[in-house]
Every structure is written in structure tokens, then in C-alpha cells.
Length: 274
Ligand SMILES: Nc1ncnc2c1ncn2[C@@H]1O[C@H](COP(=O)(O)OP(=O)(O)OP(=O)(O)O)[C@@H](O)[C@H]1O
Picture (cartoon, rainbow, N blue to C red):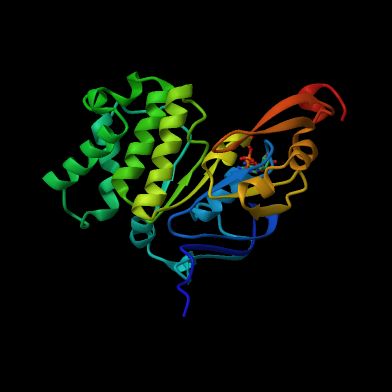
């Protein structure tokens, strides 16, 4: 019998109060794959992630891990399986960077136990793997936005969950660190069998680094499939109003925006009508 997928979303509706932002979503994330979620501003990507993380109750449908509905899982069991990398934020307290990363070990500790030497080593190694060892003793409030983003990724690595949910993990990063983080994400999936779902606003990240893409249209419809079947000129035009060209390189395809033909922003935001 085939094993259940790592993450299985079936008929999910999510939103606030009675208002559904997204409905009828069904997709899976297998161990060892990087599913990249694309979609325009305000379509509901963060709302979906909040629902996957159980911060919002589903309005309909189910979220299953390993075939098991997570709705009634104890928090500790859920936290040992699912890691979250939020967008970088400034916390109110000047924790040391190493202590922020150690928070990732919390789900692995007993109720009254303190981190062991081995937990500290795991946290140091997570920092080291992202080239952040020199920051370990610095206050988290006194490092740059990009450095904070990397520290939050290190915290998720220290947590060592089976499924990693990442909200625009490259948003604050320079060109080199974007590539470094996406390469690290790919290695986590390929070598360690993690399942990863992450949002990006860059179609080229999806073309180059995703094993599959989940693309939300402006109407909230979801199309899931291989990157080159989902990230198409038609999708980019219908979703963002941008005509694009696709260029085949030796090892990948890249897309280049050519011109914007209609304005996808809400009129009150952009002052124009589509
Ligand atoms: N706490 C909230 N209560 C009610 N509505 C909300 C709340 N947070 C977001 N929304 C609304 O839900 C919709 C989806 O927002 P969401 O933040 O999920 O979009 P997104 O796809 O993540 O956007 P972006 O790409 O800009 O980050 C938007 O219309 C937004 O205004």
C-alpha cells in the first residue's frame, strides 16, 4: 500500500470569521519535495499558511500529516513535525541570536527540561550551515533584516521538522543569500527528505528551485504541477498583467518581464483601472 503524503490538503477553505479568502484547495507535499506557492498580493497565501499552521481553523476541509487530520493533535506533536519560517520581524526583547535559534529545539525538550549540550550543538551547527556563526552572541534586535531572516531559517533547521513552511524566505536577502538559501532549501529536501512549502513572488525562483509549483490565480483558483507547466506566459499575463519571454538556458528556463499590459493592482492602491 502506498504511504500517505507528508502533507495533504483536501477541500480546504480558509479565511477570517465567516469570510473565506480561499476555498476548495487540494494539494499535497511529499517528503523530499519543494513546493513553491506563487500568487498575487492579497490573494491569501499567508492566510493559507496560517491555516496550515493551525493559527486559523479551517472553514472547511482537512489538513493531514502522514494521513492523519492535525486538527486535534497536541501542540507538542505538531511542533515536532512542522517548522515555520515567518518573514523577519523585530522582537521586543534583545535575545542573543543563539538563543533565538535554540527556541527551535523547544519541541524536542521534555516539559521541565532545559536545553542539553547536544541541543546547543544542533543550534550552533544550524547557524554555521548558513554562515552565521559570528552572529551567535549578538542581540537579535541589533542585526540587519536579512540577517534576521537567515537566523529564523537557522531556527527552523534546529527544529528539524519533517515539514517546513516558509513565508517568502528570500524577501529580505541580497542576491547571493537568495541563491544560498534556495540551494540550502533544495538540499534539505533532496538529502534529508524534508517536505518544504514556501512562498515566493519571483517566478524564476519557482522555475529554478521548485520540484512543483502551486500557482494561485487572481480568482483564488489553484493550479499545481511541474514548474514549466505552471509558470507560463499565460499565467504571468493573466495574474500580473505582464507579458514575459521565456529563455531556455542549458540547465533551466528563465523568464524575463517584457512589458506590463494592464494594471493588476486595486485602483485604490495604484490609482489606475485595469
Ligand atoms: N487578520 C485579518 N483579518 C481579516 N482579513 C485579513 C486579515 N489578514 C489578511 N486579511 C485579508 O485576507 C486577504 C488575504 O491576505 P493574505 O495576507 O493572506 O494575502 P497574501 O497572498 O499573503 O498577500 P501578500 O502577497 O501581499 O503578502 C486580503 O484581502 C487581506 O486583506
